[in-house]
Length: 247
Image (tube, rainbow, N blue to C red):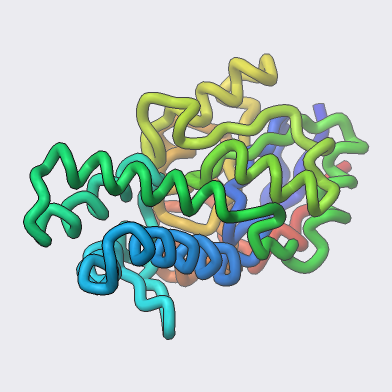
């Protein structure tokens, strides 16, 4: 079995499961592109007053920043749609109407976006993934981003063929930090829990790894969470995936 060198640890493992945004891909441009698409769709469908409520509800100001503690920064689309529906409901629509309109707006936003969705690989990501793959490690993605958008972005970036499994929030009953995504990866790759390593940039990534009893949860500092917070739950914290080695 390949040996993965991370910090001062050596891990025997069969599959490395990566989060996408903030771990392999620069999350800021991707999330801002997503926010713009949803804002434009809601404004076109329902007007500026609803957009103002939506921005406050999901935690975004597309002219300045995204609150990465808020719904747009943390939730899968299916859950964020309910937050958007609440903003629409507050403008006088019935709850059923609000949910339907939110679903239409988000579907239209997804349709308007094209690969690679402003995705840019972080430094050395492609090289590290290629080295891991050459040593017969299986690689997987477990992302809060939509399955099709994840595959489309990584295909445009020419690294999709390195992965043995892609799991998005629509592929499981429960998203992060529940263990469902990791269990799905293990079924698709034929690996066992104690052969799996989870790599991500958020507390939910690390918690998912712990909930699944993965061999290790590795936190990287290229995303939304600082070292002090990651160290509270991660087994290992490194600056980026560029510090991973294999033999």
